[in-house]
Image (cartoon, rainbow, N blue to C red):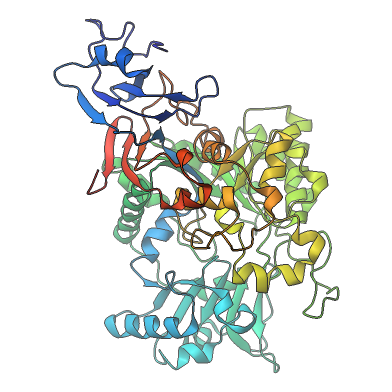
Length: 565
Protein backbone atom coordinates (compact mmCIF):
# COMPACT_ATOMS: atom_id res chain seq x y z
CA UNK A 1 0.00 0.00 0.00
CA UNK A 2 1.17 3.51 -0.77
CA UNK A 3 1.08 5.33 2.59
CA UNK A 4 3.12 8.35 1.58
CA UNK A 5 2.91 11.07 4.20
CA UNK A 6 0.76 14.17 3.89
CA UNK A 7 1.51 17.64 5.30
CA UNK A 8 -0.45 16.93 8.51
CA UNK A 9 0.37 13.24 9.01
CA UNK A 10 3.86 11.81 9.22
CA UNK A 11 2.70 8.34 10.24
CA UNK A 12 -0.84 7.30 9.26
CA UNK A 13 -2.96 6.45 12.26
CA UNK A 14 -0.31 7.62 14.72
CA UNK A 15 -0.99 9.90 17.67
CA UNK A 16 0.41 12.98 15.96
CA UNK A 17 -1.68 12.39 12.85
CA UNK A 18 -4.76 10.70 14.16
CA UNK A 19 -7.24 8.57 12.25
CA UNK A 20 -8.77 9.37 8.91
CA UNK A 21 -11.78 11.66 8.68
CA UNK A 22 -13.25 9.84 5.70
CA UNK A 23 -12.70 6.34 4.34
CA UNK A 24 -14.00 4.73 1.16
CA UNK A 25 -14.21 0.94 1.28
CA UNK A 26 -15.24 -1.91 -1.00
CA UNK A 27 -14.19 -0.20 -4.24
CA UNK A 28 -13.09 -0.38 -7.07
CA UNK A 29 -11.06 2.82 -7.15
CA UNK A 30 -9.81 4.06 -10.52
CA UNK A 31 -6.84 6.22 -9.56
CA UNK A 32 -5.76 7.62 -12.98
CA UNK A 33 -2.26 6.91 -11.63
CA UNK A 34 -0.30 4.98 -14.24
CA UNK A 35 1.84 3.32 -11.57
CA UNK A 36 -1.19 1.88 -9.84
CA UNK A 37 -4.42 2.19 -11.77
CA UNK A 38 -6.71 0.32 -9.38
CA UNK A 39 -7.26 0.04 -5.64
CA UNK A 40 -10.20 -0.82 -3.39
CA UNK A 41 -9.99 1.67 -0.51
CA UNK A 42 -9.03 5.30 0.11
CA UNK A 43 -8.54 7.24 3.34
CA UNK A 44 -8.84 11.03 3.67
CA UNK A 45 -7.66 13.27 6.48
CA UNK A 46 -8.60 16.93 6.31
CA UNK A 47 -8.64 17.98 2.68
CA UNK A 48 -6.05 15.45 1.50
CA UNK A 49 -5.82 11.83 0.56
CA UNK A 50 -4.05 9.96 3.33
CA UNK A 51 -3.79 6.47 1.86
CA UNK A 52 -4.71 4.44 -1.20
CA UNK A 53 -4.65 0.65 -1.06
CA UNK A 54 -6.49 -2.54 -0.25
CA UNK A 55 -9.29 -2.55 2.28
CA UNK A 56 -7.41 -4.52 4.94
CA UNK A 57 -4.55 -2.01 4.72
CA UNK A 58 -6.77 1.07 5.07
CA UNK A 59 -9.06 -0.18 7.86
CA UNK A 60 -6.47 0.57 10.63
CA UNK A 61 -6.91 4.26 9.80
CA UNK A 62 -10.57 4.19 10.84
CA UNK A 63 -11.30 5.87 14.17
CA UNK A 64 -14.47 6.45 16.21
CA UNK A 65 -15.37 9.62 14.29
CA UNK A 66 -14.33 8.44 10.82
CA UNK A 67 -17.07 8.65 8.21
CA UNK A 68 -17.20 5.44 6.17
CA UNK A 69 -18.51 5.37 2.61
CA UNK A 70 -19.18 1.80 1.53
CA UNK A 71 -18.85 1.82 -2.25
CA UNK A 72 -20.57 -1.56 -2.63
CA UNK A 73 -18.67 -2.11 -5.86
CA UNK A 74 -19.39 1.34 -7.26
CA UNK A 75 -16.46 3.20 -8.81
CA UNK A 76 -14.52 5.98 -7.07
CA UNK A 77 -12.67 8.31 -9.44
CA UNK A 78 -10.91 11.68 -9.23
CA UNK A 79 -13.18 14.68 -9.65
CA UNK A 80 -13.88 15.74 -13.21
CA UNK A 81 -12.39 19.07 -14.28
CA UNK A 82 -13.94 21.10 -17.08
CA UNK A 83 -11.13 22.89 -18.92
CA UNK A 84 -13.43 25.13 -20.99
CA UNK A 85 -16.80 26.23 -19.63
CA UNK A 86 -18.94 29.34 -19.05
CA UNK A 87 -20.76 28.57 -15.79
CA UNK A 88 -22.15 32.00 -14.96
CA UNK A 89 -23.64 32.44 -18.42
CA UNK A 90 -24.96 28.89 -18.31
CA UNK A 91 -26.47 29.35 -14.87
CA UNK A 92 -28.05 32.64 -15.90
CA UNK A 93 -29.55 31.21 -19.09
CA UNK A 94 -31.35 28.51 -17.13
CA UNK A 95 -33.41 31.33 -15.58
CA UNK A 96 -34.04 33.16 -18.88
CA UNK A 97 -35.78 32.07 -22.10
CA UNK A 98 -34.07 28.69 -22.22
CA UNK A 99 -34.43 26.94 -25.57
CA UNK A 100 -31.65 24.38 -25.09
CA UNK A 101 -33.93 21.37 -24.54
CA UNK A 102 -35.76 21.78 -27.86
CA UNK A 103 -34.63 21.29 -31.48
CA UNK A 104 -37.54 22.41 -33.66
CA UNK A 105 -38.89 25.77 -34.78
CA UNK A 106 -42.37 24.86 -33.52
CA UNK A 107 -41.03 24.08 -30.06
CA UNK A 108 -39.19 27.42 -30.02
CA UNK A 109 -42.41 29.17 -30.98
CA UNK A 110 -44.16 27.71 -27.96
CA UNK A 111 -41.29 28.32 -25.52
CA UNK A 112 -40.72 31.94 -26.55
CA UNK A 113 -44.45 32.74 -26.44
CA UNK A 114 -44.81 31.14 -23.02
CA UNK A 115 -41.78 32.94 -21.61
CA UNK A 116 -42.92 36.34 -22.91
CA UNK A 117 -46.43 35.79 -21.49
CA UNK A 118 -45.01 34.75 -18.11
CA UNK A 119 -42.72 37.79 -17.92
CA UNK A 120 -44.77 40.80 -19.02
CA UNK A 121 -42.61 43.15 -16.96
CA UNK A 122 -39.33 42.11 -18.61
CA UNK A 123 -38.05 44.89 -20.87
CA UNK A 124 -35.89 42.58 -23.02
CA UNK A 125 -36.60 38.93 -23.82
CA UNK A 126 -33.19 37.27 -23.68
CA UNK A 127 -31.75 33.79 -23.37
CA UNK A 128 -31.10 31.25 -26.06
CA UNK A 129 -29.78 27.77 -26.79
CA UNK A 130 -31.60 27.23 -30.09
CA UNK A 131 -30.21 24.86 -32.70
CA UNK A 132 -29.26 26.13 -36.13
CA UNK A 133 -30.57 23.04 -37.91
CA UNK A 134 -34.13 24.04 -36.95
CA UNK A 135 -34.05 26.77 -39.61
CA UNK A 136 -33.15 26.81 -43.31
CA UNK A 137 -29.44 27.55 -43.65
CA UNK A 138 -29.20 27.87 -39.86
CA UNK A 139 -30.51 31.46 -39.98
CA UNK A 140 -33.94 32.26 -38.48
CA UNK A 141 -35.64 35.57 -39.25
CA UNK A 142 -36.89 38.59 -37.35
CA UNK A 143 -40.42 37.99 -38.70
CA UNK A 144 -40.63 34.72 -36.75
CA UNK A 145 -39.97 36.62 -33.51
CA UNK A 146 -42.09 39.63 -34.49
CA UNK A 147 -45.16 37.40 -34.65
CA UNK A 148 -44.51 36.26 -31.07
CA UNK A 149 -43.19 39.44 -29.40
CA UNK A 150 -43.91 42.54 -31.49
CA UNK A 151 -43.70 45.16 -28.74
CA UNK A 152 -40.44 44.36 -26.89
CA UNK A 153 -36.90 43.70 -28.08
CA UNK A 154 -35.90 40.05 -28.29
CA UNK A 155 -32.34 38.73 -28.55
CA UNK A 156 -31.65 35.01 -28.32
CA UNK A 157 -28.21 33.50 -28.81
CA UNK A 158 -27.90 30.17 -30.57
CA UNK A 159 -26.61 26.96 -29.06
CA UNK A 160 -22.97 27.66 -29.92
CA UNK A 161 -23.17 31.31 -28.80
CA UNK A 162 -21.55 32.55 -32.00
CA UNK A 163 -24.75 33.99 -33.39
CA UNK A 164 -27.73 35.95 -32.10
CA UNK A 165 -31.35 36.19 -33.30
CA UNK A 166 -33.09 39.55 -32.97
CA UNK A 167 -36.61 40.76 -33.67
CA UNK A 168 -37.40 43.99 -35.50
CA UNK A 169 -37.77 45.94 -32.28
CA UNK A 170 -34.23 45.00 -31.22
CA UNK A 171 -32.82 45.83 -34.65
CA UNK A 172 -34.52 49.22 -34.56
CA UNK A 173 -33.16 49.93 -31.09
CA UNK A 174 -29.68 49.23 -32.46
CA UNK A 175 -30.26 51.36 -35.54
CA UNK A 176 -29.44 48.49 -37.90
CA UNK A 177 -30.50 49.04 -41.51
CA UNK A 178 -29.36 48.03 -44.98
CA UNK A 179 -26.77 50.82 -44.72
CA UNK A 180 -25.14 49.44 -41.59
CA UNK A 181 -21.73 47.95 -42.48
CA UNK A 182 -20.60 44.59 -41.18
CA UNK A 183 -18.13 44.87 -38.30
CA UNK A 184 -14.63 43.59 -38.98
CA UNK A 185 -15.16 40.59 -36.71
CA UNK A 186 -18.68 39.59 -37.69
CA UNK A 187 -21.48 39.54 -40.21
CA UNK A 188 -25.04 40.86 -40.43
CA UNK A 189 -27.18 38.40 -42.35
CA UNK A 190 -29.26 40.24 -44.96
CA UNK A 191 -32.15 39.62 -47.34
CA UNK A 192 -32.01 40.19 -51.10
CA UNK A 193 -32.48 43.93 -50.57
CA UNK A 194 -29.66 44.17 -48.05
CA UNK A 195 -31.92 44.55 -45.01
CA UNK A 196 -30.90 42.76 -41.79
CA UNK A 197 -32.81 39.50 -41.45
CA UNK A 198 -32.44 39.36 -37.68
CA UNK A 199 -29.45 36.99 -37.57
CA UNK A 200 -26.15 38.45 -36.35
CA UNK A 201 -22.92 36.43 -36.53
CA UNK A 202 -19.89 36.71 -34.24
CA UNK A 203 -18.89 40.32 -33.47
CA UNK A 204 -22.08 41.65 -35.07
CA UNK A 205 -23.97 40.24 -32.08
CA UNK A 206 -22.61 43.07 -29.96
CA UNK A 207 -24.51 45.63 -32.05
CA UNK A 208 -27.65 44.47 -30.25
CA UNK A 209 -26.23 42.69 -27.19
CA UNK A 210 -24.48 45.89 -26.13
CA UNK A 211 -27.89 47.50 -25.56
CA UNK A 212 -29.21 44.82 -23.21
CA UNK A 213 -29.20 45.95 -19.57
CA UNK A 214 -26.39 44.31 -17.61
CA UNK A 215 -27.53 41.73 -15.04
CA UNK A 216 -27.13 42.75 -11.44
CA UNK A 217 -24.39 41.32 -9.27
CA UNK A 218 -27.03 39.37 -7.35
CA UNK A 219 -28.34 37.85 -10.59
CA UNK A 220 -24.83 36.94 -11.75
CA UNK A 221 -23.95 35.40 -8.39
CA UNK A 222 -27.19 33.47 -8.36
CA UNK A 223 -26.32 32.17 -11.83
CA UNK A 224 -22.87 31.07 -10.64
CA UNK A 225 -24.23 29.22 -7.63
CA UNK A 226 -26.93 27.59 -9.74
CA UNK A 227 -24.23 26.45 -12.17
CA UNK A 228 -21.99 25.23 -9.36
CA UNK A 229 -24.77 23.02 -8.00
CA UNK A 230 -25.37 21.59 -11.45
CA UNK A 231 -21.69 20.97 -12.15
CA UNK A 232 -21.10 19.33 -8.77
CA UNK A 233 -24.06 17.09 -9.58
CA UNK A 234 -22.17 16.00 -12.69
CA UNK A 235 -19.05 15.27 -10.65
CA UNK A 236 -17.18 18.44 -11.66
CA UNK A 237 -14.91 19.66 -8.86
CA UNK A 238 -12.86 22.27 -10.76
CA UNK A 239 -13.10 24.21 -13.98
CA UNK A 240 -11.54 26.86 -16.17
CA UNK A 241 -13.96 29.69 -16.89
CA UNK A 242 -13.11 30.51 -20.49
CA UNK A 243 -14.28 34.11 -20.46
CA UNK A 244 -13.71 36.53 -17.58
CA UNK A 245 -14.17 40.03 -18.92
CA UNK A 246 -16.41 42.05 -21.20
CA UNK A 247 -16.83 39.75 -24.20
CA UNK A 248 -19.41 39.84 -27.01
CA UNK A 249 -22.79 38.54 -25.95
CA UNK A 250 -21.84 37.49 -22.41
CA UNK A 251 -21.68 39.82 -19.38
CA UNK A 252 -18.52 39.82 -17.28
CA UNK A 253 -18.75 37.15 -14.57
CA UNK A 254 -15.75 38.32 -12.56
CA UNK A 255 -17.54 40.00 -9.66
CA UNK A 256 -19.83 37.01 -9.18
CA UNK A 257 -16.78 34.84 -8.49
CA UNK A 258 -15.35 37.40 -6.10
CA UNK A 259 -18.66 37.65 -4.22
CA UNK A 260 -19.01 33.86 -3.95
CA UNK A 261 -15.43 33.49 -2.78
CA UNK A 262 -15.75 36.20 -0.13
CA UNK A 263 -19.02 34.66 1.12
CA UNK A 264 -17.40 31.22 1.35
CA UNK A 265 -19.82 29.84 -1.24
CA UNK A 266 -17.30 29.02 -3.96
CA UNK A 267 -16.77 25.32 -3.34
CA UNK A 268 -15.23 24.49 -6.73
CA UNK A 269 -11.64 25.24 -7.71
CA UNK A 270 -11.76 27.81 -10.50
CA UNK A 271 -9.19 29.06 -12.98
CA UNK A 272 -10.29 32.26 -14.67
CA UNK A 273 -9.24 32.92 -18.27
CA UNK A 274 -9.12 36.70 -18.62
CA UNK A 275 -10.67 37.87 -21.87
CA UNK A 276 -8.32 39.28 -24.50
CA UNK A 277 -10.02 42.27 -26.14
CA UNK A 278 -9.34 41.69 -29.82
CA UNK A 279 -10.08 45.35 -30.60
CA UNK A 280 -7.00 46.32 -28.58
CA UNK A 281 -3.36 45.28 -28.52
CA UNK A 282 -0.48 44.77 -26.11
CA UNK A 283 -1.42 47.89 -24.14
CA UNK A 284 -3.96 45.74 -22.25
CA UNK A 285 -1.32 43.40 -20.82
CA UNK A 286 -0.52 45.56 -17.75
CA UNK A 287 -4.25 45.57 -17.00
CA UNK A 288 -4.35 41.78 -17.23
CA UNK A 289 -1.39 41.52 -14.87
CA UNK A 290 -3.19 43.74 -12.36
CA UNK A 291 -6.40 41.72 -12.67
CA UNK A 292 -4.49 38.48 -12.14
CA UNK A 293 -3.08 39.80 -8.87
CA UNK A 294 -6.46 41.13 -7.76
CA UNK A 295 -8.43 37.98 -8.55
CA UNK A 296 -6.07 35.24 -7.43
CA UNK A 297 -7.04 34.17 -3.91
CA UNK A 298 -8.51 31.10 -2.27
CA UNK A 299 -10.12 28.78 -4.78
CA UNK A 300 -10.09 31.39 -7.55
CA UNK A 301 -7.02 31.97 -9.72
CA UNK A 302 -7.07 34.26 -12.76
CA UNK A 303 -3.87 32.95 -14.30
CA UNK A 304 -4.96 32.35 -17.89
CA UNK A 305 -5.76 34.64 -20.84
CA UNK A 306 -8.42 33.64 -23.38
CA UNK A 307 -7.76 34.55 -27.00
CA UNK A 308 -10.53 33.81 -29.48
CA UNK A 309 -8.80 33.40 -32.82
CA UNK A 310 -11.74 32.42 -35.01
CA UNK A 311 -15.43 31.60 -35.13
CA UNK A 312 -17.27 28.36 -35.96
CA UNK A 313 -17.61 26.18 -39.03
CA UNK A 314 -21.41 26.18 -39.23
CA UNK A 315 -21.60 29.89 -40.01
CA UNK A 316 -18.34 29.83 -42.03
CA UNK A 317 -16.40 32.07 -39.62
CA UNK A 318 -13.96 29.37 -38.46
CA UNK A 319 -10.59 30.25 -40.02
CA UNK A 320 -9.68 27.75 -42.74
CA UNK A 321 -6.51 27.29 -44.77
CA UNK A 322 -8.59 26.99 -47.96
CA UNK A 323 -12.04 28.42 -48.74
CA UNK A 324 -15.33 26.88 -47.72
CA UNK A 325 -17.35 25.18 -50.43
CA UNK A 326 -20.65 26.51 -51.69
CA UNK A 327 -23.89 24.54 -51.74
CA UNK A 328 -22.95 23.24 -55.21
CA UNK A 329 -19.56 22.00 -53.98
CA UNK A 330 -17.53 24.79 -55.60
CA UNK A 331 -14.89 26.85 -53.82
CA UNK A 332 -16.22 30.07 -52.34
CA UNK A 333 -14.30 33.28 -51.65
CA UNK A 334 -14.67 32.84 -47.88
CA UNK A 335 -12.00 31.21 -45.69
CA UNK A 336 -13.40 32.41 -42.37
CA UNK A 337 -12.12 35.04 -39.96
CA UNK A 338 -8.84 35.26 -38.05
CA UNK A 339 -9.84 37.72 -35.37
CA UNK A 340 -6.22 38.66 -34.64
CA UNK A 341 -3.67 39.14 -37.39
CA UNK A 342 -1.15 36.25 -37.12
CA UNK A 343 1.97 38.40 -36.71
CA UNK A 344 0.30 40.38 -33.93
CA UNK A 345 -0.91 37.13 -32.33
CA UNK A 346 2.64 35.80 -32.16
CA UNK A 347 3.79 39.02 -30.51
CA UNK A 348 0.98 39.09 -27.96
CA UNK A 349 1.36 35.44 -26.99
CA UNK A 350 5.12 35.82 -26.60
CA UNK A 351 4.65 38.75 -24.25
CA UNK A 352 1.90 37.02 -22.26
CA UNK A 353 4.05 33.91 -21.93
CA UNK A 354 6.97 36.03 -20.69
CA UNK A 355 4.67 37.42 -18.00
CA UNK A 356 3.83 33.90 -16.83
CA UNK A 357 0.32 33.75 -18.28
CA UNK A 358 -1.16 30.61 -19.70
CA UNK A 359 -2.82 31.33 -23.06
CA UNK A 360 -6.14 29.61 -23.69
CA UNK A 361 -6.95 29.70 -27.41
CA UNK A 362 -10.29 29.29 -29.12
CA UNK A 363 -9.02 27.64 -32.31
CA UNK A 364 -11.57 25.75 -34.34
CA UNK A 365 -10.56 25.87 -38.03
CA UNK A 366 -7.29 24.49 -39.36
CA UNK A 367 -5.90 27.98 -40.07
CA UNK A 368 -6.72 29.17 -36.55
CA UNK A 369 -5.10 26.04 -35.09
CA UNK A 370 -1.96 26.65 -37.14
CA UNK A 371 -1.87 30.36 -36.19
CA UNK A 372 -2.22 29.48 -32.50
CA UNK A 373 0.52 26.85 -32.69
CA UNK A 374 2.73 29.32 -34.56
CA UNK A 375 2.19 31.79 -31.72
CA UNK A 376 3.12 29.18 -29.11
CA UNK A 377 6.21 28.30 -31.14
CA UNK A 378 7.22 31.97 -31.29
CA UNK A 379 6.86 32.24 -27.52
CA UNK A 380 8.92 29.09 -26.97
CA UNK A 381 11.61 30.37 -29.32
CA UNK A 382 11.87 33.70 -27.49
CA UNK A 383 11.19 32.71 -23.88
CA UNK A 384 12.29 29.10 -23.77
CA UNK A 385 10.07 26.26 -22.59
CA UNK A 386 8.25 27.79 -19.61
CA UNK A 387 5.65 26.06 -17.45
CA UNK A 388 2.81 28.15 -18.85
CA UNK A 389 0.90 25.19 -20.34
CA UNK A 390 -0.87 26.84 -23.29
CA UNK A 391 -3.91 24.99 -24.55
CA UNK A 392 -6.01 25.08 -27.70
CA UNK A 393 -9.73 24.47 -27.31
CA UNK A 394 -12.24 23.00 -29.79
CA UNK A 395 -9.89 21.78 -32.57
CA UNK A 396 -12.65 20.90 -34.98
CA UNK A 397 -10.43 20.82 -38.06
CA UNK A 398 -6.70 20.15 -37.60
CA UNK A 399 -4.38 19.77 -40.58
CA UNK A 400 -2.46 16.47 -40.25
CA UNK A 401 0.86 18.33 -40.45
CA UNK A 402 -0.02 20.17 -37.23
CA UNK A 403 -0.88 17.09 -35.13
CA UNK A 404 2.72 16.38 -33.96
CA UNK A 405 3.32 20.03 -33.08
CA UNK A 406 1.17 19.78 -29.92
CA UNK A 407 3.59 17.37 -28.24
CA UNK A 408 6.66 19.13 -29.56
CA UNK A 409 5.53 22.55 -28.33
CA UNK A 410 3.98 21.38 -25.08
CA UNK A 411 0.56 22.68 -26.15
CA UNK A 412 -2.39 20.84 -24.62
CA UNK A 413 -5.25 19.72 -26.86
CA UNK A 414 -8.45 20.79 -25.07
CA UNK A 415 -11.22 18.65 -26.58
CA UNK A 416 -15.00 19.09 -26.48
CA UNK A 417 -15.86 15.48 -27.17
CA UNK A 418 -19.65 15.85 -27.35
CA UNK A 419 -19.29 17.56 -30.72
CA UNK A 420 -17.56 14.58 -32.38
CA UNK A 421 -20.69 12.80 -33.56
CA UNK A 422 -23.12 12.79 -36.45
CA UNK A 423 -25.96 15.25 -35.92
CA UNK A 424 -27.85 17.61 -38.25
CA UNK A 425 -25.55 20.55 -37.50
CA UNK A 426 -22.59 18.40 -38.52
CA UNK A 427 -24.16 16.53 -41.43
CA UNK A 428 -26.16 19.38 -42.97
CA UNK A 429 -24.35 22.60 -42.05
CA UNK A 430 -20.71 21.53 -41.81
CA UNK A 431 -19.55 18.49 -43.79
CA UNK A 432 -20.99 19.64 -47.17
CA UNK A 433 -19.15 22.96 -46.87
CA UNK A 434 -15.82 21.47 -45.75
CA UNK A 435 -15.55 18.80 -48.41
CA UNK A 436 -14.48 15.19 -47.82
CA UNK A 437 -10.77 15.78 -47.15
CA UNK A 438 -11.22 18.43 -44.46
CA UNK A 439 -14.28 16.70 -43.03
CA UNK A 440 -12.01 13.72 -42.28
CA UNK A 441 -9.72 15.95 -40.19
CA UNK A 442 -12.40 16.78 -37.64
CA UNK A 443 -11.89 16.26 -33.91
CA UNK A 444 -8.78 14.06 -34.31
CA UNK A 445 -8.68 12.77 -30.73
CA UNK A 446 -7.11 9.45 -31.67
CA UNK A 447 -4.39 11.02 -33.79
CA UNK A 448 -3.56 13.56 -31.09
CA UNK A 449 -3.35 10.88 -28.42
CA UNK A 450 -1.18 8.61 -30.55
CA UNK A 451 1.14 11.53 -31.32
CA UNK A 452 1.87 12.00 -27.61
CA UNK A 453 -0.17 15.18 -27.11
CA UNK A 454 -1.61 15.90 -23.68
CA UNK A 455 -5.41 15.85 -23.81
CA UNK A 456 -7.60 17.95 -21.55
CA UNK A 457 -11.39 18.06 -21.83
CA UNK A 458 -14.24 20.47 -21.39
CA UNK A 459 -17.87 21.03 -22.27
CA UNK A 460 -18.12 24.67 -23.42
CA UNK A 461 -21.45 24.73 -21.54
CA UNK A 462 -23.91 26.36 -22.21
CA UNK A 463 -22.95 25.60 -25.83
CA UNK A 464 -23.40 21.90 -25.04
CA UNK A 465 -24.22 19.75 -22.03
CA UNK A 466 -21.88 20.06 -19.02
CA UNK A 467 -22.18 16.31 -18.34
CA UNK A 468 -18.66 14.78 -18.50
CA UNK A 469 -20.06 11.25 -18.69
CA UNK A 470 -21.94 12.09 -21.90
CA UNK A 471 -18.68 13.47 -23.29
CA UNK A 472 -16.80 10.30 -22.31
CA UNK A 473 -19.44 8.29 -24.14
CA UNK A 474 -18.91 10.24 -27.36
CA UNK A 475 -15.11 10.21 -27.10
CA UNK A 476 -15.18 6.42 -26.89
CA UNK A 477 -18.06 5.68 -29.30
CA UNK A 478 -18.05 8.72 -31.63
CA UNK A 479 -21.84 8.53 -31.44
CA UNK A 480 -24.26 10.72 -29.49
CA UNK A 481 -25.51 9.16 -26.23
CA UNK A 482 -29.03 8.88 -27.64
CA UNK A 483 -27.87 7.10 -30.82
CA UNK A 484 -28.49 3.35 -31.11
CA UNK A 485 -25.50 1.01 -31.62
CA UNK A 486 -26.51 0.72 -35.29
CA UNK A 487 -26.00 4.46 -35.89
CA UNK A 488 -23.01 5.44 -38.05
CA UNK A 489 -19.78 6.14 -36.21
CA UNK A 490 -18.22 9.54 -36.85
CA UNK A 491 -14.64 8.94 -38.04
CA UNK A 492 -14.15 5.69 -36.09
CA UNK A 493 -10.34 5.85 -36.33
CA UNK A 494 -10.47 8.86 -33.98
CA UNK A 495 -12.13 6.96 -31.12
CA UNK A 496 -10.16 6.75 -27.88
CA UNK A 497 -10.62 4.26 -25.07
CA UNK A 498 -12.43 5.02 -21.82
CA UNK A 499 -9.22 5.17 -19.78
CA UNK A 500 -7.75 7.85 -22.04
CA UNK A 501 -11.00 9.81 -22.15
CA UNK A 502 -11.36 9.73 -18.36
CA UNK A 503 -7.73 10.76 -17.93
CA UNK A 504 -8.34 13.76 -20.20
CA UNK A 505 -11.31 14.88 -18.07
CA UNK A 506 -9.40 14.45 -14.80
CA UNK A 507 -5.59 14.46 -14.86
CA UNK A 508 -5.37 16.16 -18.25
CA UNK A 509 -7.60 19.05 -17.27
CA UNK A 510 -5.86 19.27 -13.89
CA UNK A 511 -2.60 19.69 -15.79
CA UNK A 512 -4.09 22.38 -18.03
CA UNK A 513 -5.47 24.12 -14.94
CA UNK A 514 -2.12 24.02 -13.08
CA UNK A 515 -3.97 22.15 -10.32
CA UNK A 516 -1.19 19.64 -9.86
CA UNK A 517 -2.44 18.49 -6.46
CA UNK A 518 -5.60 17.13 -8.06
CA UNK A 519 -6.56 14.94 -11.01
CA UNK A 520 -5.44 11.57 -9.65
CA UNK A 521 -6.10 9.54 -6.49
CA UNK A 522 -2.73 9.40 -4.76
CA UNK A 523 -1.57 10.01 -1.18
CA UNK A 524 -0.92 13.67 -0.55
CA UNK A 525 -3.23 14.87 -3.32
CA UNK A 526 -6.31 16.94 -2.56
CA UNK A 527 -9.36 14.79 -1.92
CA UNK A 528 -11.46 15.86 -4.91
CA UNK A 529 -13.38 12.65 -5.52
CA UNK A 530 -16.50 11.33 -7.24
CA UNK A 531 -18.56 8.19 -6.62
CA UNK A 532 -20.27 6.74 -9.69
CA UNK A 533 -23.26 4.40 -9.59
CA UNK A 534 -21.34 1.66 -11.43
CA UNK A 535 -17.99 0.80 -12.92
CA UNK A 536 -18.34 1.76 -16.61
CA UNK A 537 -15.13 -0.10 -17.40
CA UNK A 538 -17.02 -3.34 -16.69
CA UNK A 539 -19.87 -2.60 -19.10
CA UNK A 540 -20.19 -2.19 -22.83
CA UNK A 541 -18.91 1.02 -24.39
CA UNK A 542 -22.44 1.72 -25.66
CA UNK A 543 -23.63 1.89 -22.02
CA UNK A 544 -21.19 4.51 -20.71
CA UNK A 545 -23.77 7.31 -20.91
CA UNK A 546 -26.05 5.45 -18.49
CA UNK A 547 -23.55 6.04 -15.67
CA UNK A 548 -24.62 8.56 -13.00
CA UNK A 549 -22.81 10.49 -10.29
CA UNK A 550 -23.85 9.60 -6.75
CA UNK A 551 -21.54 11.76 -4.63
CA UNK A 552 -19.00 14.53 -5.19
CA UNK A 553 -16.31 15.66 -2.74
CA UNK A 554 -14.04 18.73 -2.93
CA UNK A 555 -11.17 18.72 -0.44
CA UNK A 556 -12.84 15.89 1.45
CA UNK A 557 -16.08 17.84 1.88
CA UNK A 558 -19.25 16.43 0.32
CA UNK A 559 -20.67 19.02 -2.09
CA UNK A 560 -23.24 16.79 -3.80
CA UNK A 561 -25.18 13.65 -2.97
CA UNK A 562 -27.88 12.09 -5.12
CA UNK A 563 -31.11 11.18 -3.37
CA UNK A 564 -30.26 7.48 -3.62
CA UNK A 565 -26.56 7.84 -2.73
